[in-house]
Length: 51
Image 1 (cartoon, one colour):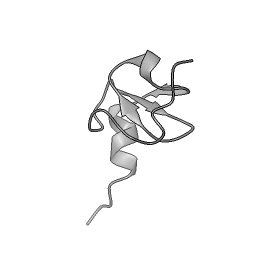
Image 2 (cartoon, rainbow, N blue to C red):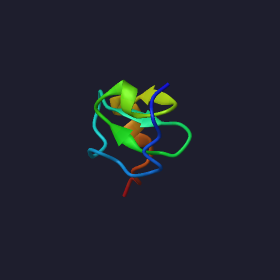
Image 3 (cartoon, one colour):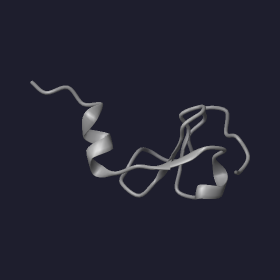
Image 4 (cartoon, rainbow, N blue to C red):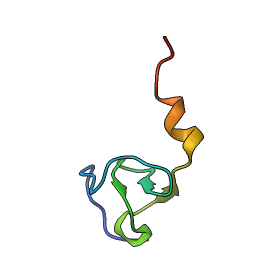
């Protein structure tokens, strides 16, 4: 869709941002990543370990 950031994120992960499914870069704008997937709150909680 957009140009590839080659894994270099523009912003930190937060709900409403877009993450590239191909390289893992995160951006606020959908057109800045090649395969955008919108991040949700539950997506961010999956990566955290529970103590």
